[in-house]
Image (cartoon, rainbow, N blue to C red; front, side):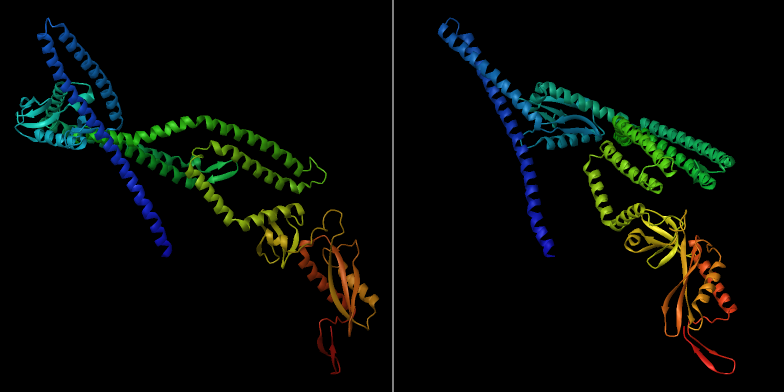
Length: 599
């Protein structure tokens, strides 16, 4: 709450100051206009005074025949008045030009039809009040059932001219400023206004006559009938097109494919075509109905003004879109050139790296399995560089809104993708470390299984129990990784499988060696060469620990190998009459004596 109070205390004076500044600006403009009008009126009054003085001087000059001195004096005064009048006219024109830059014209209209504009004030009435008052009086004349055009007349009133109705009611008064504004005399402007008022009232009355109203209603009915027929025809046409789509669905039974990728099934394609057919029909009907509205509105004078507005709503966006497309063509050509350059550059790079993958091209120290990841990295960098080059030519890329959205998305991605980025970096490091390949039997942390997938973000491992485990690459990089398959390929010896058993001190170790070796040789997937070998790992209190070691190339079948090895060990030692003393157990011998065996 204290924060909101401080914010209010800060913003309220700012708002008040802004509103006050705007109000002061508007008031200053109005005062400037009023002052200019007052100066023009003062000049005209002085001009009338000088005109009267000039007439008096001319009379005196005519009566001063024979008096040379007086004649010269009067002629000099007349010349001075002429010069002053000329300078005054120039000043008036300059003031008028300045006034026209700031003054606003207010229309005088009848039923949305503009007759003329009012730009100047008269007495205490400004231009806006004058135009409203004149429009109201003209509307009363239009509504007067006994109106006669010849009842309008013009009368002079102390230098101004009034348009009168029935020689008593003033409809509009034309002052000196009005005439000066249009560069005409008061009488000329009054006659012009009189004719416009007469014509407008007569035209409007004729337009709203009963006969014309009936004609318009008939025309509206005709247009609606034609519109209904067109809609009916469109419905029939699009029903036939829908039937054709359903009748020929066998032609697209395989759906839509892009090379070997099925983009859409046949059923979905049929549904999409039917929906597209319906959408096109609706667009046509709405467009025809919308375009018929201006035609209907243009029939009646009251709604005729809406015609241009409706057309503007649909044509203005089309013009803007068309102009934008035309103006964008040079930039589009640049974008296409950049795209084609990078596309064929990537094709060449792709060919090179795939040849490296197939070992057709070799670089010292560069392993074939690095080819595709390196190509993907290089492709990403090139696409990013292409986007940097293309970005300035995208429509609206320089607009603040586009830039703001781009910055927002960048911040959003950077905040929400920290873990993803760490996994991507770890994936790149793992790729070039080459700790394992697809299909290898590995142990990552506590997870043991075969590597099924190795992506930029995760490594998928399938255990011997068909469990699909997803390990983030960052965890793979931070944990210890055991690869059981790395020494089972090519000419390497293989993986050593081993197991510990404990045998009593009464059995010679040479015999134990022979039995363990024989059991290992009989085990499936155990190599004959190198031969299995035995190690003694500990001398315990009651027995000796032996470890059998054997080589195999089948690291992915360790569970089967260990199971078969244990079976063979049991069978071999049982056949030789030797007890395996691990783990500890109790046994009752023949004769009832209980022995305890420790493993």
